[in-house]
Image (cartoon, rainbow, N blue to C red):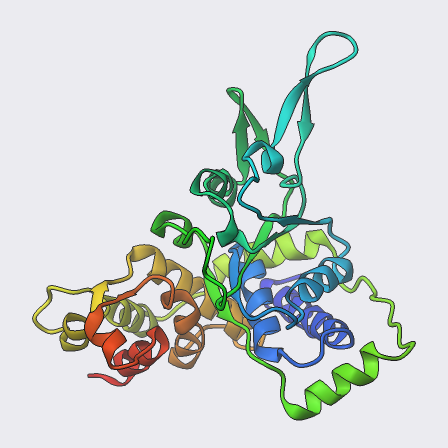
Length: 319
Protein backbone atom coordinates (compact mmCIF):
# COMPACT_ATOMS: atom_id res chain seq x y z
CA UNK A 1 0.00 0.00 0.00
CA UNK A 2 1.46 3.39 -0.99
CA UNK A 3 1.80 6.34 1.37
CA UNK A 4 -0.93 8.37 -0.31
CA UNK A 5 -3.51 5.61 0.12
CA UNK A 6 -2.43 5.01 3.70
CA UNK A 7 -2.73 8.71 4.47
CA UNK A 8 -6.22 8.81 2.95
CA UNK A 9 -7.33 5.85 5.04
CA UNK A 10 -5.94 7.37 8.22
CA UNK A 11 -7.61 10.71 7.43
CA UNK A 12 -10.91 8.85 7.06
CA UNK A 13 -10.38 7.17 10.42
CA UNK A 14 -9.66 10.57 11.93
CA UNK A 15 -12.98 11.90 10.60
CA UNK A 16 -14.71 8.95 12.24
CA UNK A 17 -12.82 9.76 15.42
CA UNK A 18 -14.05 13.36 15.38
CA UNK A 19 -17.61 12.17 14.84
CA UNK A 20 -17.29 9.78 17.76
CA UNK A 21 -15.95 12.50 20.05
CA UNK A 22 -18.66 14.88 18.83
CA UNK A 23 -21.36 12.56 20.15
CA UNK A 24 -20.11 13.21 23.69
CA UNK A 25 -18.42 16.64 23.45
CA UNK A 26 -20.89 19.13 21.99
CA UNK A 27 -19.28 21.84 19.85
CA UNK A 28 -15.61 22.83 20.24
CA UNK A 29 -14.91 21.55 16.71
CA UNK A 30 -11.81 23.66 16.16
CA UNK A 31 -10.36 22.64 19.54
CA UNK A 32 -10.92 18.95 18.70
CA UNK A 33 -9.24 19.47 15.31
CA UNK A 34 -6.20 21.10 16.89
CA UNK A 35 -5.89 18.51 19.69
CA UNK A 36 -5.89 15.71 17.10
CA UNK A 37 -3.42 17.65 14.94
CA UNK A 38 -0.99 17.96 17.86
CA UNK A 39 -1.40 14.29 18.76
CA UNK A 40 -0.72 13.14 15.18
CA UNK A 41 2.37 15.38 15.11
CA UNK A 42 3.70 13.92 18.37
CA UNK A 43 3.25 17.27 20.15
CA UNK A 44 1.58 18.36 23.38
CA UNK A 45 -1.23 20.85 24.10
CA UNK A 46 -1.76 23.54 26.71
CA UNK A 47 -5.50 24.19 27.01
CA UNK A 48 -6.76 27.43 28.54
CA UNK A 49 -10.40 27.92 29.45
CA UNK A 50 -12.80 28.64 32.29
CA UNK A 51 -14.10 25.69 34.34
CA UNK A 52 -16.97 23.65 32.93
CA UNK A 53 -16.08 23.73 29.22
CA UNK A 54 -15.53 19.94 28.97
CA UNK A 55 -11.73 20.00 28.92
CA UNK A 56 -11.47 16.83 31.00
CA UNK A 57 -14.37 15.19 29.15
CA UNK A 58 -12.68 15.88 25.81
CA UNK A 59 -9.44 14.19 26.85
CA UNK A 60 -11.21 11.25 28.47
CA UNK A 61 -13.42 10.70 25.42
CA UNK A 62 -10.39 10.93 23.13
CA UNK A 63 -8.56 8.24 25.11
CA UNK A 64 -11.61 5.95 25.02
CA UNK A 65 -12.11 6.35 21.28
CA UNK A 66 -8.54 5.28 20.51
CA UNK A 67 -8.30 2.54 23.10
CA UNK A 68 -5.37 4.27 24.82
CA UNK A 69 -4.57 4.48 28.51
CA UNK A 70 -5.58 7.74 30.19
CA UNK A 71 -4.62 9.23 33.54
CA UNK A 72 -5.40 12.53 35.17
CA UNK A 73 -3.24 14.40 37.67
CA UNK A 74 -4.76 17.28 39.64
CA UNK A 75 -1.90 19.70 40.17
CA UNK A 76 -1.80 21.29 43.64
CA UNK A 77 0.82 23.35 45.54
CA UNK A 78 1.90 20.33 47.61
CA UNK A 79 2.31 17.95 44.65
CA UNK A 80 5.82 16.49 44.46
CA UNK A 81 7.74 15.37 41.35
CA UNK A 82 7.66 11.76 42.58
CA UNK A 83 3.86 11.94 42.64
CA UNK A 84 4.03 12.20 38.84
CA UNK A 85 7.04 10.14 37.84
CA UNK A 86 6.89 7.45 40.52
CA UNK A 87 9.28 6.48 43.28
CA UNK A 88 11.36 3.63 44.62
CA UNK A 89 10.10 1.73 47.68
CA UNK A 90 11.48 -1.09 49.78
CA UNK A 91 9.74 -4.32 48.76
CA UNK A 92 8.97 -7.31 50.96
CA UNK A 93 12.14 -8.93 49.65
CA UNK A 94 14.11 -5.95 51.07
CA UNK A 95 15.02 -4.76 47.59
CA UNK A 96 14.32 -1.39 46.07
CA UNK A 97 11.37 -1.55 43.68
CA UNK A 98 10.25 1.21 41.34
CA UNK A 99 6.54 2.02 41.49
CA UNK A 100 5.45 3.79 38.31
CA UNK A 101 3.62 7.10 38.59
CA UNK A 102 0.69 8.35 36.49
CA UNK A 103 3.06 9.64 33.80
CA UNK A 104 3.30 6.06 32.50
CA UNK A 105 0.27 6.37 30.25
CA UNK A 106 -0.58 7.22 26.64
CA UNK A 107 -2.62 10.34 27.38
CA UNK A 108 -1.88 12.42 30.48
CA UNK A 109 -4.19 15.22 31.59
CA UNK A 110 -2.23 17.68 33.75
CA UNK A 111 -5.15 19.55 35.28
CA UNK A 112 -4.43 23.15 36.38
CA UNK A 113 -0.71 22.75 35.78
CA UNK A 114 0.01 26.30 36.96
CA UNK A 115 -1.15 25.47 40.49
CA UNK A 116 1.95 23.48 41.37
CA UNK A 117 5.53 24.56 42.03
CA UNK A 118 8.14 24.99 39.25
CA UNK A 119 10.01 21.97 40.63
CA UNK A 120 7.03 19.72 39.99
CA UNK A 121 6.26 21.38 36.66
CA UNK A 122 9.81 20.57 35.61
CA UNK A 123 9.17 16.87 36.28
CA UNK A 124 7.18 16.87 33.05
CA UNK A 125 9.87 18.59 31.00
CA UNK A 126 12.10 15.59 30.31
CA UNK A 127 9.10 13.36 29.67
CA UNK A 128 7.55 15.78 27.16
CA UNK A 129 10.78 16.27 25.23
CA UNK A 130 12.52 12.90 25.47
CA UNK A 131 9.56 10.56 26.20
CA UNK A 132 11.42 9.05 29.14
CA UNK A 133 12.07 9.90 32.79
CA UNK A 134 15.04 9.48 35.10
CA UNK A 135 14.57 8.39 38.71
CA UNK A 136 17.50 7.63 41.03
CA UNK A 137 19.87 7.58 38.09
CA UNK A 138 17.81 5.07 36.11
CA UNK A 139 16.05 5.96 32.87
CA UNK A 140 12.59 4.57 32.13
CA UNK A 141 11.05 4.71 28.67
CA UNK A 142 7.45 5.88 28.43
CA UNK A 143 4.82 4.05 26.40
CA UNK A 144 4.15 5.29 22.87
CA UNK A 145 2.25 7.26 21.86
CA UNK A 146 2.71 9.74 24.73
CA UNK A 147 0.60 12.88 24.72
CA UNK A 148 0.30 15.55 27.45
CA UNK A 149 -2.69 17.84 27.58
CA UNK A 150 -2.36 20.43 30.34
CA UNK A 151 -5.05 22.88 31.43
CA UNK A 152 -4.89 26.36 32.93
CA UNK A 153 -7.62 28.47 34.51
CA UNK A 154 -7.31 31.98 33.04
CA UNK A 155 -9.49 33.62 35.71
CA UNK A 156 -8.17 32.83 39.17
CA UNK A 157 -4.46 33.68 39.36
CA UNK A 158 -3.97 33.81 43.15
CA UNK A 159 -1.76 30.97 44.35
CA UNK A 160 -0.55 30.03 40.87
CA UNK A 161 2.95 29.56 39.46
CA UNK A 162 3.23 30.80 35.86
CA UNK A 163 4.86 28.23 33.63
CA UNK A 164 8.50 29.08 32.81
CA UNK A 165 9.34 29.80 29.18
CA UNK A 166 11.29 26.54 28.81
CA UNK A 167 8.21 24.59 29.90
CA UNK A 168 5.86 26.58 27.68
CA UNK A 169 8.12 25.98 24.70
CA UNK A 170 7.59 22.21 25.05
CA UNK A 171 3.90 22.61 24.24
CA UNK A 172 3.23 22.53 20.53
CA UNK A 173 -0.13 24.33 20.80
CA UNK A 174 -1.72 26.65 23.30
CA UNK A 175 -5.46 26.35 22.65
CA UNK A 176 -8.03 28.80 23.99
CA UNK A 177 -11.34 27.10 24.74
CA UNK A 178 -14.35 29.43 24.45
CA UNK A 179 -17.99 29.19 25.51
CA UNK A 180 -20.35 27.10 23.37
CA UNK A 181 -22.91 28.76 21.10
CA UNK A 182 -26.55 29.08 22.16
CA UNK A 183 -27.63 26.01 20.17
CA UNK A 184 -24.68 23.98 21.43
CA UNK A 185 -25.46 24.86 25.03
CA UNK A 186 -29.09 23.79 24.57
CA UNK A 187 -27.85 20.48 23.19
CA UNK A 188 -25.49 20.12 26.16
CA UNK A 189 -28.45 20.47 28.52
CA UNK A 190 -30.44 17.88 26.61
CA UNK A 191 -27.66 15.31 26.83
CA UNK A 192 -26.42 15.95 30.38
CA UNK A 193 -29.67 16.43 32.29
CA UNK A 194 -31.41 13.31 30.99
CA UNK A 195 -30.61 9.59 30.91
CA UNK A 196 -28.69 10.05 27.62
CA UNK A 197 -25.68 7.74 27.70
CA UNK A 198 -23.47 7.15 24.68
CA UNK A 199 -20.84 4.45 24.78
CA UNK A 200 -17.69 5.57 22.99
CA UNK A 201 -16.33 3.11 20.42
CA UNK A 202 -12.70 2.52 19.57
CA UNK A 203 -12.31 3.80 16.01
CA UNK A 204 -8.52 3.92 15.78
CA UNK A 205 -5.74 2.21 17.69
CA UNK A 206 -2.34 3.25 18.99
CA UNK A 207 -0.62 1.77 15.94
CA UNK A 208 -2.68 4.08 13.70
CA UNK A 209 -1.46 7.10 15.68
CA UNK A 210 2.18 6.05 15.43
CA UNK A 211 1.75 5.41 11.71
CA UNK A 212 0.17 8.82 11.23
CA UNK A 213 3.02 10.49 13.12
CA UNK A 214 5.49 8.81 10.80
CA UNK A 215 3.55 9.76 7.66
CA UNK A 216 3.24 13.41 8.71
CA UNK A 217 7.03 13.68 8.82
CA UNK A 218 7.20 12.39 5.23
CA UNK A 219 4.72 14.88 3.74
CA UNK A 220 6.56 17.20 1.30
CA UNK A 221 6.52 20.98 1.78
CA UNK A 222 7.17 23.55 -0.94
CA UNK A 223 9.88 26.18 -0.54
CA UNK A 224 7.39 29.06 -0.53
CA UNK A 225 5.66 27.57 2.55
CA UNK A 226 9.01 27.17 4.32
CA UNK A 227 9.95 30.76 3.43
CA UNK A 228 6.57 32.14 4.51
CA UNK A 229 6.80 30.35 7.87
CA UNK A 230 10.32 31.58 8.64
CA UNK A 231 9.38 35.09 7.54
CA UNK A 232 6.29 35.10 9.79
CA UNK A 233 8.17 33.87 12.87
CA UNK A 234 11.04 36.29 12.20
CA UNK A 235 8.56 39.18 12.38
CA UNK A 236 8.01 38.40 16.08
CA UNK A 237 11.66 39.07 16.96
CA UNK A 238 12.64 42.48 18.31
CA UNK A 239 15.73 44.62 17.60
CA UNK A 240 15.28 44.18 13.86
CA UNK A 241 14.73 47.55 12.13
CA UNK A 242 12.28 45.94 9.69
CA UNK A 243 10.04 44.51 12.43
CA UNK A 244 8.02 47.60 13.34
CA UNK A 245 5.19 45.70 15.03
CA UNK A 246 7.50 43.55 17.15
CA UNK A 247 9.65 46.52 18.18
CA UNK A 248 6.57 48.47 19.25
CA UNK A 249 4.58 45.79 21.04
CA UNK A 250 6.77 42.80 21.96
CA UNK A 251 9.43 42.13 24.58
CA UNK A 252 10.40 38.75 23.14
CA UNK A 253 9.74 36.72 20.03
CA UNK A 254 9.48 33.07 19.03
CA UNK A 255 12.45 30.80 18.38
CA UNK A 256 13.20 28.15 15.74
CA UNK A 257 11.04 25.55 17.50
CA UNK A 258 8.02 27.66 16.58
CA UNK A 259 8.90 27.23 12.89
CA UNK A 260 9.23 23.48 13.34
CA UNK A 261 5.84 23.20 15.07
CA UNK A 262 4.10 25.42 12.52
CA UNK A 263 5.34 23.31 9.61
CA UNK A 264 4.47 20.02 11.36
CA UNK A 265 1.05 21.34 12.36
CA UNK A 266 0.34 22.68 8.86
CA UNK A 267 1.29 19.33 7.29
CA UNK A 268 -1.05 17.38 9.55
CA UNK A 269 -3.84 19.99 9.46
CA UNK A 270 -3.78 19.91 5.67
CA UNK A 271 -3.51 16.11 5.47
CA UNK A 272 -6.64 15.69 7.59
CA UNK A 273 -8.43 17.79 4.97
CA UNK A 274 -7.26 15.73 2.02
CA UNK A 275 -4.20 17.76 1.04
CA UNK A 276 -0.96 16.02 0.18
CA UNK A 277 1.15 19.14 0.81
CA UNK A 278 0.40 22.11 3.10
CA UNK A 279 -0.18 25.61 1.78
CA UNK A 280 -0.16 29.13 3.27
CA UNK A 281 -3.76 28.68 4.43
CA UNK A 282 -2.73 25.72 6.59
CA UNK A 283 0.17 27.69 8.08
CA UNK A 284 -2.17 30.56 9.02
CA UNK A 285 -4.63 28.06 10.52
CA UNK A 286 -2.13 26.79 13.11
CA UNK A 287 0.27 29.71 13.61
CA UNK A 288 -1.73 31.41 16.38
CA UNK A 289 -1.84 28.22 18.43
CA UNK A 290 1.94 27.86 18.08
CA UNK A 291 2.91 31.50 18.62
CA UNK A 292 0.55 32.87 21.28
CA UNK A 293 2.55 31.37 24.17
CA UNK A 294 5.94 32.09 22.59
CA UNK A 295 5.70 35.88 22.31
CA UNK A 296 5.71 38.26 25.26
CA UNK A 297 3.79 41.54 25.10
CA UNK A 298 5.36 44.75 26.42
CA UNK A 299 3.66 47.56 28.30
CA UNK A 300 2.62 49.40 25.13
CA UNK A 301 0.59 46.41 23.92
CA UNK A 302 -0.99 45.88 27.33
CA UNK A 303 -1.89 49.56 27.70
CA UNK A 304 -3.67 49.46 24.33
CA UNK A 305 -5.57 46.33 25.34
CA UNK A 306 -3.97 44.17 22.66
CA UNK A 307 -3.68 40.40 22.96
CA UNK A 308 -1.14 38.00 21.48
CA UNK A 309 -3.72 36.97 18.87
CA UNK A 310 -4.18 40.63 17.86
CA UNK A 311 -0.44 41.00 17.34
CA UNK A 312 -0.23 37.75 15.32
CA UNK A 313 -3.08 38.95 13.09
CA UNK A 314 -1.17 42.16 12.40
CA UNK A 315 1.99 40.20 11.64
CA UNK A 316 0.12 37.96 9.17
CA UNK A 317 -1.35 40.98 7.38
CA UNK A 318 1.90 43.00 7.36
CA UNK A 319 4.17 43.07 4.33
